[in-house]
Image (cartoon, rainbow, N blue to C red; front, side, top):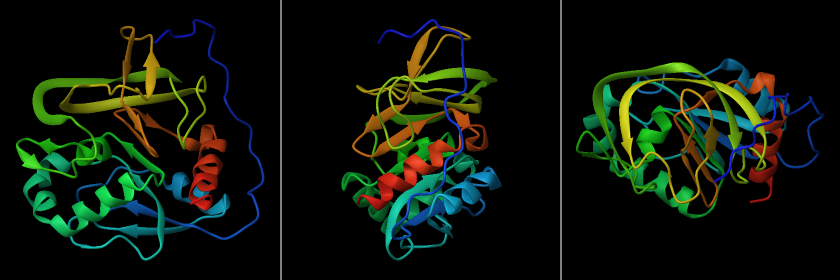
Length: 221
C-alpha cells in the first residue's frame, strides 16, 4: 500500500468519554506480559471501560463479560511452554478474536496471537509463526495506519518504538496494521476482524483518542 509522505502531525486531541455502559476490557499481565504503560489502563478507564487484569500463565478464563482485549509487551518466549500448556485460555482468546471483539496486541501480544512461538502452539488467531533470532530490532518509528481498526482510522499517524529479538513470518498480513518509512519503507502487522496486532509499541497518552475509539468499539459489541 502507498504510504503518505507528509510530515508527521499529532493524530488526536483529548476528548470526553462517551456515555453508556462500562464494557470490560481485559488486560494481560503476569510474568509473561510485564511491559505495559500504566497510562493505557488509566485512559481506558477514563474513556468508560472497566479494566480487569488477568494472567495468561495462570488464568484459564478471560474475565467475566470481556468485551475487548489488550495484550501488551513482555517476554512470552521465556514462557512459551507454559503459555502453550494453558489451552483453555488460548481457546478463549481465539474465540473472542474470531467473534470480532476488539483486540489490541503489541509485540508480545502479537507473538501470543500467532500460530506458534518457537514451535509451541499459541492462540492461532494469526496465520503466522514466531521464533527467536539473534538480531535485535530496536528503534523509534513513525507509523501510519494502513487500514481502519479498533485502534485507529486509516491514515492516522502515531509514533512508537520496536524492541524485540523475535521474527514473525510473515511479518504482515493481507491487511497490514502500519506503514513505515524508517529504517526502511515497509508495512507490518495484522488487522483482521477486530484484531490489531503489531510489533510497534505506542503510547496512548500522546493520542488519547486511541483509548476512546477502542472503548467505543467494545461498547458496540
